[in-house]
View 1 (tube, helix red, strand yellow):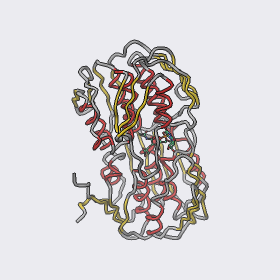
View 2 (view 1 turned 135 degrees about the horizontal axis):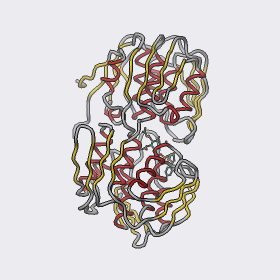
View 3 (view 1 turned 135 degrees about the vertical axis):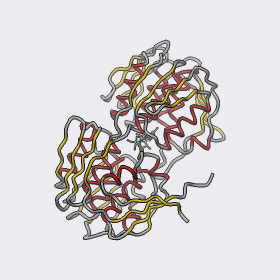
View 4 (view 1 turned 90 degrees about the horizontal axis):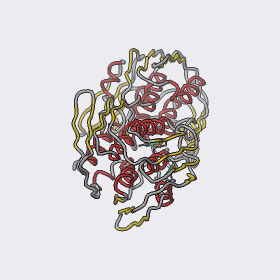
Amino acid sequence: MEKNTEKFIIKKALPLSGDVRISGSKNAALPILAATLLTDRGVTLENVPALSDIEDMLTLLSGFGAKISRSTKAISIGCEQIENRVPDHNVTKKIRASFLLAGALLGRFGKCSLPMPGGCGIGLRPVDLHLKGFSAMGADISMEHGLVSISAPYLHGAGIYLDFPSVGATENIMLAAALAQGVTFIYNCATEPEIVELADFINLMGGFVEGAGTDSIAVHGVPFLRGCSCRISPDRIEAGTYMLMAAAVKDSDVCIKNVVPQHLSPVIHKLTETGVQIVTGDNFIRVNSNGLIKNTDIKTLPYPGFPTDMQAQFMALMTTGRGSGIVKETVFENRFMYVSELNRMGADIKIDGRSAVVNGVRHLSGTDVKATDLRAGAALIIAALMADGKTEIGEIHHIDRGYENIEEKLKKIGVEIERVREN
Ligand code: EPZ
């Protein structure tokens, strides 16, 4: 299929003002979509973002025979008649979250075969911790011809220690354990809001998950799970990205609505350190950027530390800030690919392994650049708002994976952005 050959053309922005309404969380919706396989009853989800990653996951569910219907406000998924087939590799290779189908299929059928997820721009992204969990629960695992086959005629509870608090491994083990015999304890698990949301969803279906949001989760297996309806919470990374877009343009005053400020506290604290004025309410964050950014140091960590998914955006913001900032990426091994694109715009960033030093420059200048992954694309938009002249961002299919209606939302606060086909 022809690669999406569209690009954004973005002009240096005048002060931004107005409201941005945040969409549903991609990283909460994806595991919840996988979880719909755990019941043969209907599930209705509201506030699911219209993103290519979501479409890909829905395509995979349909491939198993799930019945999917949509209204303007909700998506209904019926997994009554499910065939435990090998999903289409052309789709699974597009989204890492497709591997979450393993836990759900194991939970439902006791076995599955999935293409081994590949790496991507930001790292090798192995699934050893996912497989460690499944084998602790009694699964036999084999890999050949790029397929991972997992079989557990008797899936039972286990005590599993995660060597790294992996979000995906925590979610996958929860999905497999929801219907297993006995209790599964996940130690040193991820504590992200998306983990809590998945646990809440499983409990809404009649499951019994305790401790989500802490570093130890207990999943008590139940005999079956029923259908339910739920609303996907706001996307904290989309919200953080718009906060930085507002911060990037001097004299901007932007209100980001439909957010959960508590989910963004590391971003709020670090942005405040740069001198940006932030006011938060129950479900909004207001950003005033009335002066120069004072550069600071960032270290990405699993939640509640500074999110790795905001690292590129914050680096972009600091390219024209005062002084220097050190950015340490501790979660992924290769998440600075976008730096060369920022340096082509006149940034002064030097990488040393998993750290980078950004020295603020007086100005960036627009040129043609390419998105290397979803958040790198967002970082280039932030740089384009600050850069003199016009910036053309290619490979924007990466951006469409995670930012719903981005042109519409940006135009509404005064950004001159245009989506055109690459010639
Ligand atoms: C989720 O990816 C998110 N994706 C990522 O967001 C996010 O960056 C990441 O969590 C960290 O917060 C979704 O939720 C769909 P991990 P995931 O397993 O689950 C290593 C975005 O931009 N690891 O927590 O794949 C791994 O290599 C995306 O929206 C193992 O070593 O992340 C990485 O270095 C990008 N073995 C670290 O853990 C394993 O078995 C964190 O990975 C699993 C992971």
